[in-house]
Amino acid sequence: MSVDVEIFETIDAVLGRDHTARIGTDATRIKELADCGFAGLAYEVFEIELVREAEPRLLGMLREGTLTRLAVKQCKNRGWKFFVHEDDMSVLHGSPLERDIIMVDVFTEATRKFHRDLQRGQGWKADRNGPRGACSLLSYFIGQCVWVFRRAYVRWARQRVSWARLHAVYDFTEDAANEAGIGGLLEATSYEIEDSEVFSTDFEDILDEQAPRTQAVVRLTVMGFPDAEIAERLKLTAAAVRQRRSRFRTALYQAAREQRIWIPEELHAKTASRRQNQRGAV
Image (tube, rainbow, N blue to C red; front, side):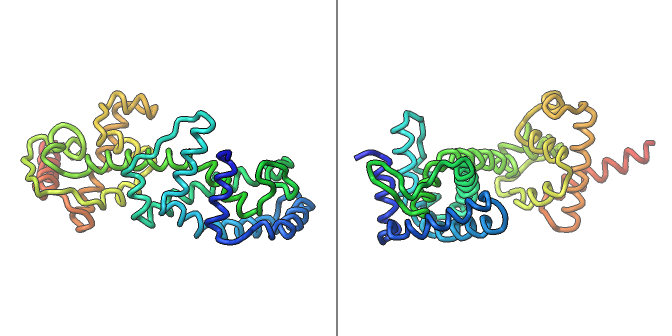
């Protein structure tokens, strides 16, 4: 049995009934949409209905690992390298939020491909000839989601790794305090950090309020990049990098005073004192 046949048989088993009976109705719907060029409100409604019907099935397949298993097998059959880490499998099994996040990307990719194929006269056919024969539109669309899962998973996994790295340096721990990360951002090189002192996760909320260039400067700073490399990457001057970082520190200290975020008091109190001394010297 070919991999494609196995995929569609698994999908039909998930759907729980014979969806081939819908092929005639699906063919009529596609013909009507073709008359409109697969565009306009009629097609948008059709696409929304298709995604809504597929969504609970695909989320269940993702939770149980069926979607991942089929995607890995499909890639292997085509000679593509694709591996899903067991930790990620556990996350996707246990977290409805993470399943929703990755499925948004899957649906975006799948509907784009599905629409493009229809406009080109390709894709689903009511009279499809193959080792398994025809299938319903729903089965076919879920198959498209299996097809695009690889790219959606890779993006999701990379984002999780990036977030984990950033979150590690956002934590105001002893290891991260004196060289890079948040410690470097807040100029905390002389402050003794206790193991129990952890920087609030509200940091991201405050960072999101800043200009895109400032966000980029801060993210690269907490990842340990030197000013010269940050400037080169963002096409800024070194002075502009320092200025944007300084503005963000000001925003953080203001947020700390407003009790929107926790920062060791010694840091923002010390900074305020240093600025007062500088103004006095001037």
